[in-house]
Length: 559
Image (cartoon, rainbow, N blue to C red):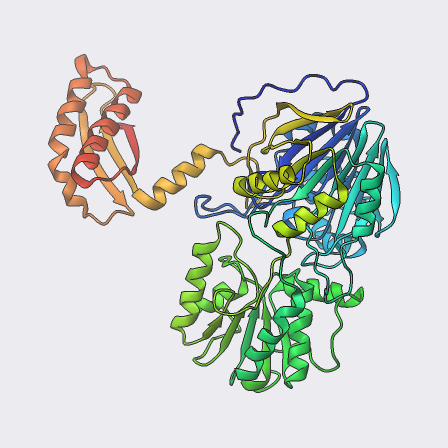
């Protein structure tokens, strides 16, 4: 676990009548969204997601929010409100519930259905769940929560208005203002306006597209592009998308029906999520279109709906690109449609997959060369619209990297918002007497999931992994007579992960022997001192001669 050392002190005790907001993730990054609200000794959590690792996190499976700020207060948590079913908002929930398994989880029907398999995987069977929908109002401890429909790239997304005696907080979750959504469910601006008329004291707004001018393109606008891909493809079509992007899968199913093709799902999460969406009525499958086998029809009549649009190493599309998928072998003339945007930080992985697919002879269609994906987040024009409707007293931009948060803050100020609070992960904001201000910060590091280990991996160990991957490994073994204190064997230098042959170290071996013998005075020796000598002499040589900084492991054995 890494620790963020902020220049802010720990916050003081919460004043009576004040509402505290603690950002534990999602501010300064795209992922691991988690916000904690405190009032009258009770805590309400909104979202608890994961962050996906980047190239500088070798071996890491997931990155979680840091629960240490609330771990001593688990019994004070009255509920976890989930705004929608994306991994960066629900993926961390099982890890929090492993620390207290009876915390109520609140969300829409689809969101909780997508969470259920995760709870089963972690063997969490007694979790209280409350299904809510737009226009519902429920009370959890001192928090009255009103749920508002918002449009996003997954159905059943909700904003939440949190009401306490300290004031009203409106949290948008992820949203956009698509006026022609595929499911007809638009962002409820009437509810935003009504809440604004009554008074919104703190507005937490999605910042992801705050630096993008205008309005986000409607989902319906990409239907012609998908239709063109289907019309022009002579062989098999492989569509890669997020396993939760039900709207995109619906468009693919409709296009397949129109062009007489069959669709097979590839990837466990895709199969599972689409079955959930179909069972709950969020996905409408034309008769006879979906099949169980990838070869149920000739190649020119087949569509494979796959996971792996972000270049994830173990996802189906990545394995197709490197030829390691057990069922699907790409052939020249196949068309691969990447129906997703690039998550910041994933660009290199995605381009590697595109290169691999292209090398195999596939025709790759992606956002860079066709309108085959639109964002699920509000652009600058939509955010301005919301600020003018809600007219909040205070604004706290959330969900985005630093540039997104700052762009959102500028939009809020441009519309005349009296007070904008710019925060990062770990910042603590208190709302008192209608004014929000930063009052301190809590430790808010990355918690790494590495196989079955959660939180045990440190930054130092991650650095060691990167050194091993980039610079290689050297072991130096010397055997010393425990009685005489003289070298009886070695030193032997063995290299791994380095291009140079081991004989290159013949040059430094005599100097290493001399340095060791100087340390072996009067028949006495200190193993630690000998190890330091080996590391210093060989490390200096490798740095000067080979211009490398490998991991060096000195070993002293007694004979």
